[in-house]
Length: 283
Image 1 (spheres, helix red, strand yellow):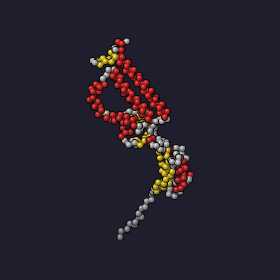
Image 2 (cartoon, rainbow, N blue to C red):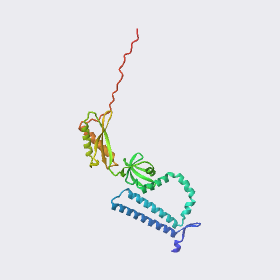
Image 3 (cartoon, rainbow, N blue to C red):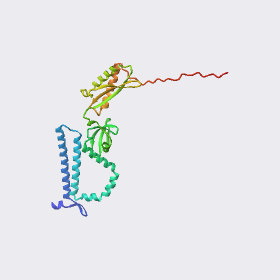
Image 4 (tube, rainbow, N blue to C red):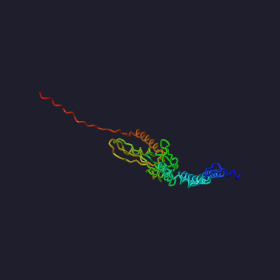
């Protein structure tokens, strides 16, 4: 059995891989796999017990997985007789060349580590980035997978979340405030317009009615052709808020028609110079 374990599978000069070292590397692989699964389960159970299952769970699990597997690969290479320091030293020039060519990829890797450690953006967060409102589905080491409001999946490079200015709506400690504006004819009863808009807002299920977050109506401006009113409200339905706004606009349109409130179209009065008689030629 000893001879079998010490039998060479690959041999080249001072380097050789035996059956024993290969079995040891396989054992390290199996133990690492079990450790990663167990650690992931313990993290999930810990968050579930605290009742705070969110994106932090995925970030911590990812970091544990990366760290344990890096250590396992180093141990497997050493068990198989591969000198890591010699390998790194001998390929230093190559690594410099590769590093210069892959700067953006390395930048995304570092950004991914920063995101996983800091937790400023986590899986499940709703953020405004690159001019879009997206929901973060998964943060990997180099890229993040996000979903737009149109349910399109986009792969974001991680450096966008680290280097650029983003708005994380999920980090708000309070519900988010939104508004919709509408213009009405100058002959409209302003008090009636306010009551109708308030009634539409209070009738919607996704609008909060707490004392602290109660909706209200504001007269915003005197425009050229209309009085512009705004319904200002608070909601927790951040990702699908455009659907809420659309439903409110439809409700307002129907309510305005029932109450004979007119939404005017732009009007322009053009004054032209009166025609002057053309003098006749003298005879």
